[in-house]
Length: 163
Image (tube, rainbow, N blue to C red; front, side, top):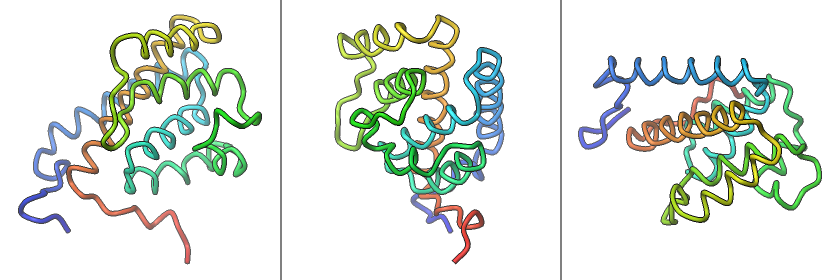
């Protein structure tokens, strides 16, 4: 239940929330059109949500990733993906972009300057221009949802889990 100080933004401004949902649908459609499948999109969603510490989004996107066919091994190793050989080049490229466009709690956003330029150049060795744009939009969209859920203090979505 939201407090007076932290209203659920999706409930207090439903039109605005509906608009961001529509953006997310368009991002997913554009991603799939250029070959970034649901499994890869969900890997990005989980990784960004891990960095941002968004419990509500993690509780939605871990199960969604499993349903999309992401292996439990990849999910278990996702926070250490750079040190693991289980991720494909495409996954690594998309995760590079996702991390570059995400701000860790208390950390610096690498959205500008050499760090972002380097991440984009690295990913562009694997992804074409359309894929690169789709990867960036995917990271931007999940970051927006993370911010909404964190600002609203949304609880984890427990319907995806059985005790």
